[in-house]
Image (cartoon, rainbow, N blue to C red; front, side):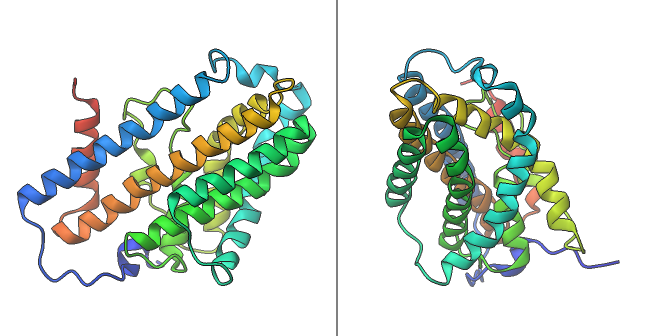
Length: 263
């Protein structure tokens, strides 16, 4: 049986003294607030574009909707290769820079309507993955380690900013796969259907007449911020498990309790 690797094995930070209970509680509370804020802001900004986001997928042509899963899976495959390679050439950038660059990419794609948005989709997916890898590095993990690279893909399994998510869906935080042959393809195949819904909503927003460039820039700005925040929750929780010397699954459950508790 092959070894199951996790990002914990690639943590660069030397943690010699476990955190005390009060520090762990404070970090969990901060992660819960970060999780809540990530999606809420995105919905508010996107609603400013002109109405509800409900039914955006229905606005896409049927042939495009039917190919979304396959296109998303292909985009993830290409992103996995391109994002890692780009880190050897260009250093990681601050969150604000990533959001600005992503917005510029979305504007360029939106100016071309649906055809332009379809061309932009793989590039945006690679850029989002690259920014997720940057967050992993900030949290003390090695983005080139197999376990960390897989976890970067797992972040895409979180609900997108257009989804109503009260914290009940935290499966992306606890998903584990053995790094055996073909595991990355299996993981991408699991993530692609969900991400295709998210990207489909983005594509639909970019088809708005006249406002396509604005919609593309806005949605990309929101998505870049959202997935960076989800990465901070994901890898922050991984780091906390090591620092607190507690099982990761236990911390996931405690975070979920916070998110589901009435406010």
